[in-house]
Figure 1 (cartoon, one colour):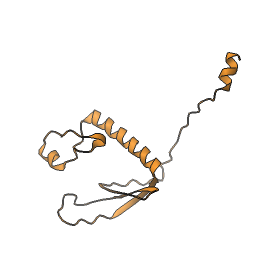
Figure 2 (cartoon, one colour):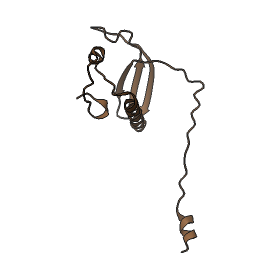
Figure 3 (cartoon, one colour):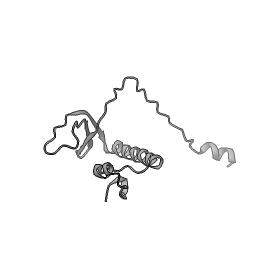
Figure 4 (cartoon, one colour):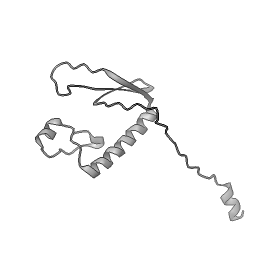
Length: 117
């Protein structure tokens, strides 16, 4: 078999590009997210907690609900992880403990995926 025949028999890789039309998208700010799941879907409820440091009961109204399958959720996890990693490489570690942020203490070491150990 000639070299040309070998090359033509191999499947060619096709690059896929996705273009997102976000002209109708409405931006919403959220400082609260509740994640729940069913055996088939991940459900993320986003809302605004006007008093995130208040004591006792806090009522938060979910303003947006995103429902996705576990494949999409895992892709989202990967994309968010990469985005946070790039941000921390540029601007430094993101401290999740608000008391440590407020006092200016150096950040504690974090475990995988930014989970505080």
